Length: 431
Ligand code: CMC
View (cartoon, rainbow, N blue to C red):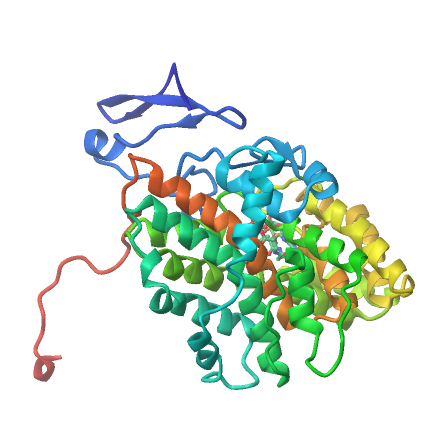
């Protein structure tokens, strides 16, 4: 960040302030309003943070107008095409692509931490069988702080590192166990001669009674889904993790807070909601009815998988996801999958409609991901846990960046108070 000598003038009545302007390496300039309250006695008001940079970060950058997403400077489509999830994890956490030795060491470190503390397995059994797997994820990841005491001291860099590796390594095991629990099948333990994505597929779909061979094309598609979800700047769940961590809370509790935030349908829950919507539409002839509902201000219905706070162009992740959907469905011999046909036609109709064009609403990452996961055999309730699994590295990278920043303060927004002014208590008999 550079302080570029430009200032913004702020005046209110007789008061005039020069506010510094900070220049990022990419993106719009930022007006530094930190002194506004102490020197000007006013707050700023920005619900939803539509104009507010909440932190300084060097990890991920989105150019919403161009439809570009960079991780440490590298475009997401190049990473999705040429890299793989664990390499992207390394890049996000440490800032540079690893050498082959660094990559090998990192992969074996993660692989050696895939098992859960055996006692945690009993913890799963406290949930109802019909639990949503996201509820299990929130509970079990939060409970990691009770099982891994030796990596909860955030002032110790080594403990932070151990917590990070544990979270990345164990998240697929937790997500797969959450799934197995809800379908009443035995848990499948990780098998460490498999790569990260194959291990996850095996833990989800293998049963002890039969051999299970992971299809390499499905494993590659799974890895790509992980890569496409790895990080996304200061979104709601990442900001939640940062805010929770700013109080000094332990990493497992903070990541559990991020998972809880991700669950909502406006964020990570959109992938489940989108596939359910596509299936409800069912056939292309019903698309106009749903598009009309999405445009109707009196109807709360929205086209799930459409629109984004930052992208005002194609979400670059959606482009890769669409291509992946075609490949996976062809491989599985279901290229005429009716849900994919509805999705493609809905995308075409919406993009030609002035309502969506004027508001710059394009398909986002969730529009096609559910179709792939559905074809792989995942139930819709597992879509958001898979998003959470993949986003864990983003949360961790942002958490580590924040903790290491010497200027870090507890996050403490102010408010525009609209409640009753001071008044005196009235005894109940006098009310
Ligand atoms: N369908 C119909 N209209 C929409 C949609 C949609 N999906 N999204 C936005 N709009 C309209 C909205 O009604 C508003 O219209 P008007 O200006 O006439 O009032 C305008 O577009 C701007 O919408 P907004 O709600 O102010 O935009 P936002 O930046 O606050 O919301 C969003 C972004 C992603 C929450 C929203 O687009 C949405 O609800 N999309 C559907 C849910 C979804 O797919 N979420 C996944 C996001 S990507 C994955 C992730 O990051 O988690």
